Image (cartoon, rainbow, N blue to C red; front, side, top):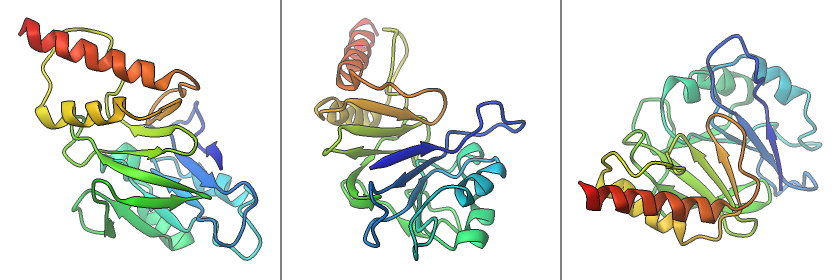
Length: 200
């Protein structure tokens, strides 16, 4: 699996990280996948400049981690340019096929589990690849460093599930990834939440 962040960190527009997942060998059965599309039109040129396999569509599917504009605003242009299948937990018009908790999706040459993780938004999901220990978190607040605040029970349940996974690498909707020790961070976040609950 190859993961490429297509987002220019000095973009003139506010956008999220947009990740292109490809198989290691660009085989016909690999599924070229965008995780979020962002809000930066330059992403389209970066996709065109990327080797995505002979005889393959550059973007075969889009998976949205949630429907906020900085993650989804470029979707009409992506659909017009590449005609991908679109998957989201959101029920907004034009979002294509629904993503359900526990569903498995092939991205590149790997399988990812959809984990419903409301908290940042009611339609937030994370995507977890057991084979590589990779987690795409979107804007789900999986790294919590304070024992203050209140948290909804559905979010806590999602974080409990995530903390049981063998997560090594976490790719976020904004900012750089965590390349190792992902599960320890998730367990620490869960500990902070439980302390906050006890204090509250």
